[in-house]
Length: 185
Image 1 (cartoon, rainbow, N blue to C red):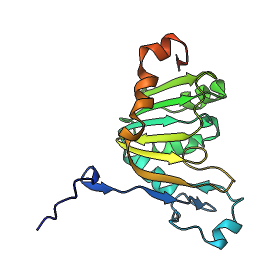
Image 2 (image 1 turned 30 degrees about the vertical axis):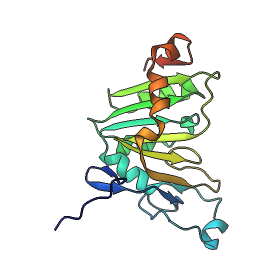
Image 3 (image 1 turned 60 degrees about the vertical axis):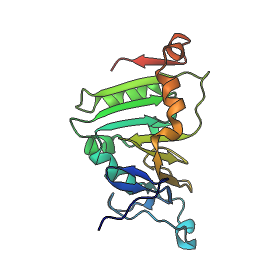
């Protein structure tokens, strides 16, 4: 017998989406260590270790449509993009800092389905987001981890939670006012 979902349940590909907060794994040897749902004292004592958001990268590797909004995208380890971005996936990146560095990183990926938009200072987007198909991830630091700071991320949000921002970024007025500019790769 199939249980009936509550009216307020969020679903994505048949799974119930429930927002969860995670503490990225402290990566010492591989990208498949476990993220934590609870911050222990032991974890907090190791906050200076490089952190990898493993649940994010596993979902990233399965996704067809990927949007990343991160002013610090240049800090992202490009090897993870190369390793996990499928040939038939479409990646759209919105970032504002180190555009030349980001261009070079993205050019090194053998994929023609990549779009880069430079976000001008006038727009100032502080938080970091990733949308994998229709699931929203919200990061306290660089998308995917790679920080040596104490940080966390959440997942399980419906993309409609930030649909207004996406609509604005894609609206012709935003481009006309040159708040964002499409970059050639």
